[in-house]
Each structure stands twice: as C-alpha cells, then as structure tokens.
Length: 307
Image 1: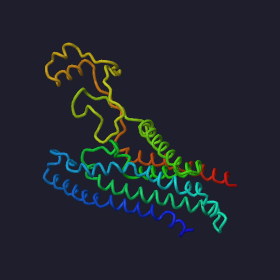
Image 2: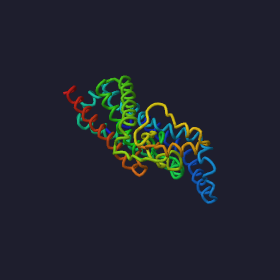
Image 3: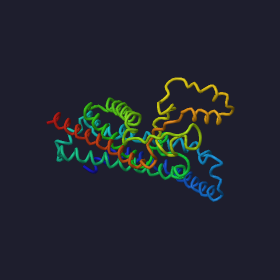
Image 4: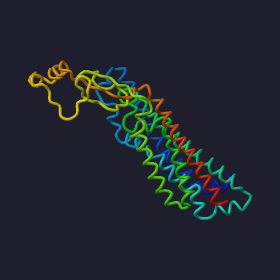
C-alpha cells in the first residue's frame, strides 16, 4: 500500500517539495538581509526614520500570497486523494485485493493530513521567521493578512481545507465538482470567521480617549474593532456639527481641545495585542474541530455508500 501511495502521489509530493524549496531560497536571502538592516538601524537609532520593508516589495507580495497555500492543499490533495479513485473506480479494485477498506481509509487519511501539516507548517515557519523583524517594530500581527499567514493558524486552515476536499471528493465522487466545492466552501468559511467571528473570541476592551494625541487611538498592535466619536458618553451618529466657537478657535489642535471641553471624546473598542496567541490557538481549534467533523462525515458516507 505504501508503494501504491507513492506511485499515485509522487508527482504531487515532488512538486510540493520543489515549491517549498523555491519559496525558502528568496525568503532566506531577503530575511537575513532584513534582520541585518533592523540590527543596523537599531544600533544607529534610525529605525523610525524609514520604512523597514520599503525595498522588499516583491518578496512581501510573495509572502502575502502564501495565504492561498491551505486552499491549494485542499484542491490538489484533499479533493483528489479519494475523489479521483472513486471517480475512476480504482478504489473498488483495491478493496477486492488484500487491502481492506478500513486500512485504505486509514492510509489515505494519514497521508493527507501528514502532508497538510508538513507543507503548511513549513511555509508558515518560513513566513513567520521572515516577518519577525517587521513584527518587532511597528506592524500589528492582527493587521491585513499577517494573522492568517503566520504561526499556527495557517496549519489549522490547511487541515480544514484538506478535510473539506476529502469530504467533497467522497460526496461527489468526481474531482472537478469536489474542487469547486472545496474552493467555494473554504473561502466562505474563512471570510465568515475572519469578518464575523474573530473579533468576538473574547470580550473586547473599551477605552475612552481624548480628541487628539498619542493616546487617542487603540494601542499599537491591537485588533481594532471600532472607533466612535462620543458626546458625553453617547455615540454621535450622523454629521458632526462642532460648536461655532470651536470652529473659530484657530488650529485643528485648538478646535479639538475646544470640542473636548464641550464633552466630545473617542471610544475605542479593540482586542489587546497580548491576546494574539490566544486568538491563534482559538482559531486553530475552530478549524481543527471543523476538519474532524468533515472527516467523520466523509468516512460515514463512504461506508454507507459502499457497504
């Protein structure tokens, strides 16, 4: 069975290994240079005078594009590892030989998830290492795609995508519908979690701040949920009409000070930066649990249809 798995998936394995190595080379070269640049600017106390990543545009795009790795795992591994054999009828042939159905399923699952974890883990480790200099300066690891491509969250996404592809392949018994289902369901689930659920993992912090100044926004590195203008503690909806005396106060700073005296302030709702790892583990757990459900459904469907 091991020889058969190798014969069936050797091209996928070799291409995947080549892709990871192809990513590792530029990431290592630019990451080493980036770390040296950070060390030098800290020694000279000049880090605040320039954008640390200003000369790394191309590799930054490549690093951000690793966000698609989990869905590629689901498409090229999850949707094909069982779906292709069911479509071609080779699974039934294998089951008539010395390989039992239970062993066939166990080996397929082991191969699929070992690859998903190894591939996504390697890519995530490379991206996290490359991003460490920027993470240590001004960038928030909650911002943009940073949360989705670093540390353990991408591994959870890959496990989920692999399970989703497997379940789609078993349900459709055809590769192309399984691929389409995997892509649509993965993107939909990811958007739902990221846009609608992630900010509610824990109760957010609410902070009232002044009209202007270093403390007027959420702390650096936090996950900002909302920033609202308030008047005597009540959120101001609609256009803001400052007092005429404030408008005539002169500079913007003087107008803000005047509005603050009139009772205006900002209310910031956010998740603190120190919850980053808690959120990473929560999100990993959510997608791992969804993957477990999908695997159970796939095995149940497979056993009932071919009983």
